[in-house]
Length: 212
Image (cartoon, rainbow, N blue to C red):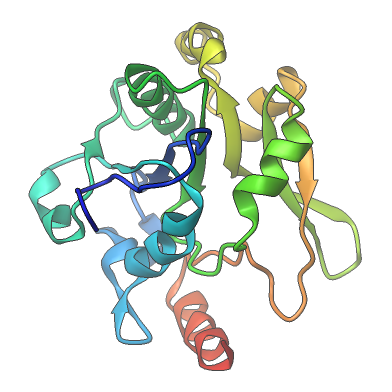
C-alpha cells in the first residue's frame, strides 16, 4: 500500500468504511473481526475484498484504536454515545467521506469476510444517485436485506443525525425510510454476506474459506 488507507484508483472511486463498532455479545465480547480465519484475522479478509474496489478505506471502531494499528487504516469512532448500533458508524463514515470531498460512502460489516468483488459497482447501479443496500435470497428464495452493506450519499448526513437523535437505531428501517435501492447478489457457491456472530459461524466460515 502506497499510503495507509489510500488506493491509487480512478477519480470516481468511492471511499469505504468497515463497520466494527459493535459489542460482539454473541461471541462473548471483544473484537470478533480480529479472530483468526484461514490463518489471518477476519478483518484482513474484509479489507482484501474491499481494497481493490474503493478509493480510500477506513475502519469504524470504538475504544483504543491501537489494537487495529497493524492494518494501516484510519480508525473512526462513533460520534454518538452509548453504542447505538451501525447507524452511528454510517454517520461517522459520512462525516469522513465528506471531509474527503466525496459525494457518497460505502459501508460493510467487519464480520463479512466473503464480500463480492463487484460490490461497489452493483451498489452504485442500484443507488441511481441515491442510497442502496445489498440483498441476497434466503434458503427459500425470498430477498433478505443486508443493510450494513450499503452506499450512502453524504447529503443524507443531517437526515441520519436527526434520525439518531430521535431514537432510530435500526439501519434497515432507516434505509427503507429514505427509499434506498436494493442491489441483489446470488448466494451460489456461498452467500457473499455470510457474517460471523457465533463460534459456530466462525467454524462455518473456515469451511467456506477452504473452498475459495
